[in-house]
Length: 326
Ligand code: DP6
Image (cartoon, rainbow, N blue to C red):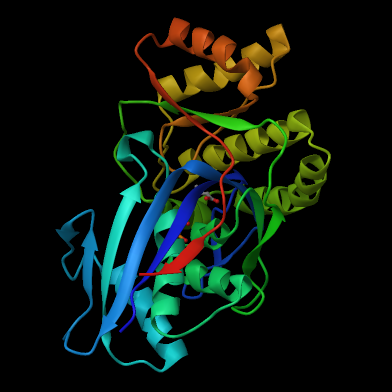
């Protein structure tokens, strides 16, 4: 059968997805807004093969065990259902998302898998349907189908929950400075973390209401190229999300003393120096600083004053998924 290769980039949510209204279909409790990044991506090749007796998943040259490939097989099963194909597949995936960067690779991984597997099975899905399919692998993957700014509309069913492009060509100066915080705390996966917050954090419903309300303000800020408004909305949303976690049962947190030092630095640079820099964090300790390329050297200097050996990586707006034969 024909081979197809898809390249999908990671995305970082500015307004977060942190909880599911339907965990089987992965329908979120909030609409979310993200920026797709140019520097980090996953490239995946899929071909179906009637001589295989199970799916064969190779990630960065290593054959995954049945247990490690469960989520991949789940998505392949959905593709088989949609296409009517019965054979198993070869999946070969390469992550260009340095693990040390603490950037979620599941978004780019499941977007690339959905793209390559659907085409290899003979399906030609619209980008909307591809976003719905990627969503079933990992919610945040729904947004990696699109470049630049994207919004995942929470919807209320499989058919109505998908991401759409807001502004694929980002012509205004915006970047994310990823600050690598080394002392990783014990890992709680995003899937587990959001479930704990949703089922036991007392402030969860308020966070959902606030996040859904912030979506229209964030869209306006993006269209107005208004970094200050967008950055404030993003930082508030991330801090409110991370404030839920220590109030869950059992309590947990992703943020370390160093994460807080970087968050405070962003607030100090804004308040004392008038530099537009805003913090956002996902299911890990690393902080991403939403900022302008123009301010990079001031931000780096200030960062190295508080954390002399800290590593950073700069990420800029990137493209949507690309799928080719071969
Ligand atoms: C904090 O998409 O990894 O990055 O749907 O359970 O696979 P599952 O979760 P996932 O969660 C991402 C959570 C987040 C916020 C976001 O990307 O919106």
